[in-house]
Image (cartoon, rainbow, N blue to C red; front, side, top):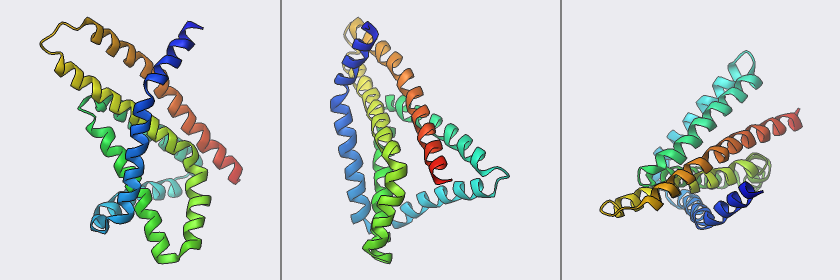
Length: 200
């Protein structure tokens, strides 16, 4: 019971980071729809996604291979976002904005090339079924990465002070990130399997 209360308190303390993460993600979407000068960069990001999809489709067991790829890709990616966030929050900031820009860029190009009907299909048949779990998870993970970055700034600010309280707070935060990370990876895997089963 005490652990649940402590974790609930931890989540409340994370509220401002969840909001900031969501705002940055939305800013990325807007930037993706209004920044034609970034076409080459966006196409390179989409090309890497296409290459992974091709490897999955050409494997001897596409379903199993896809699940393995998703597991390792998400586990590594989410861990990197949270813990590389200690480098001043740069990695989660980049992660949020680029993922938002990819969605914005994709929506803009589909709308321009195929019309509003194709955009509707992309959003409601593509993004929502797969993104209803992945997008909130992305925002939550990046929020933890930004929180990690805030600790770095606080440690620098307290470099000339004795701050045992900050050390304990950092340790407590790191302990909280472990079950969060495990839960996030399992949630994404479960959602992927569910979508696959419904599509059979």
